[in-house]
Length: 130
Image 1: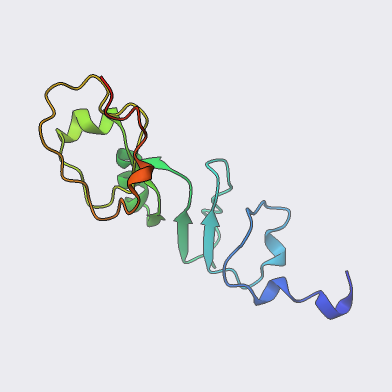
Image 2 (image 1 turned 90 degrees about the vertical axis):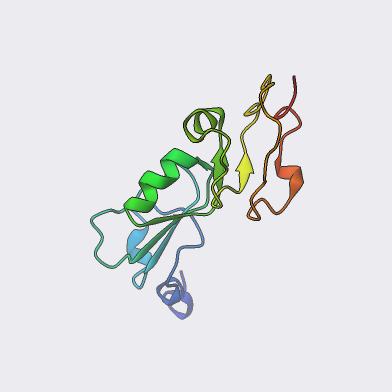
């Protein structure tokens, strides 16, 4: 790499790509860790990282556990398991519905969809099928 561009990555305070321990050192000023895949490294012992953002889908119960650890979850999925625990109450943090989450659910009469579900196309066609 040319010396002219050698310090470009040190200008980033966030990672625009998934990081591994082998390339972490290129992002010297990293403060916000973006996690794009469930398998991404968390760097939990890195004292310089102040914020961790999950960009991959996580179910509501997992998102609550991650929030307690200080993570920000951008894609929170409502699953049939969540429905069992929450009894049709959709938390405002929900952004999408899991496939088949309301399939064969004949008790469902009314459902208030949170504002965070901005695109109704995020609701899979099988989510409400019988």
